Image (cartoon, rainbow over all chains, first blue to last red; front, top):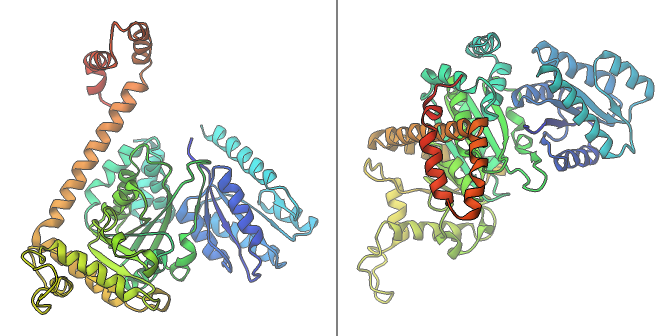
Length: 136
Length: 354
């Protein structure tokens, strides 16, 4: 089977990329192809990269508090290009009620600080398998 | 052709980036419909100039690529970039980080960037990269840049699928002996010594030019070292002058210095690329290279079809399993069984794909 392709990006203005790098390395070690775009990405840059790279998953890391603005914007841009099949997931300092609101808006699961990387890996694997069995 | 593939081709021809990305994925993974797709795109292939950029890790390939893309955009060309990074042989995963250096062109609709992992060399990676370049070509990009890490034979092959190959080195790349080693030094149409503000940059350029001068045969008849007329028997000078000349018969790679972090030297690099392409056209080498590319593609397709048709066929596998006793007892050899297998597979191999 082909490897799962994941875009790992940091939208917005905070400069804390350690978490995104740890996640990128963990997904790579789990056999995924991780496209890492680095800091200070606009939602437009993230959506463009996700579409050009034809990824299965977009993982966003936000520690600035701007998640309620940035994450829905990425979702909308992907939808506008007909790519609502891409899983948008992520993590950071996001209050529980905001996570619920974002998940209701169409993101996948969002993860808080302290989550073991194996949990993200399993989540993405399970999501991918479920999607592949649907389309097969 | 299935409905979905028809719709994809329609979107592709309408210039939609998402359709291009899907098409690249189908080709990269040789997913169902890949050969039909390539057949549809084939008439549109052959317009783009292809530039390969390779060199050791950390030499500044992505930064140089980014600057080239910017300059080409200023000249009004559209650009497709294929950035190849290695797959881990242990986990099968890959971290593809070349987009980080290409941020300044990330939102330009005239630029398409695609990261590819090497995924091990099995199954003709260089052939697949060439096919992805074909897809970008068919989409209508004027220039295609294939960027890859210059380690290992497959990676060199990838760079060589380009019309012009640029090898990016840095002063730390090694002493003069390294420059004489086989491999990456032999595939360059243009050398770039990047990070030219660091110590050793001029010396590396001299070393490469010396090697190129010697390769041109300028050392013939030169006395060992005493009494050499450096004005007439200076291999470095000969290489430098040959690299500047517009000689339709023979190309001598120029050795250029750049400081990519400051954008210095990129104009000279682009001029050299343009000059090399003129040489390819004048000498007929372009036609030759493209014919070889087509020939290689046929060979790859044949190899893949033979492999798939034989080993996806349950009956062939059952037959082969039945030969194991004979092989084990020594009554048959792997070679006699292989010959027999090919003989009995004639109809299977010549059959048309379902």
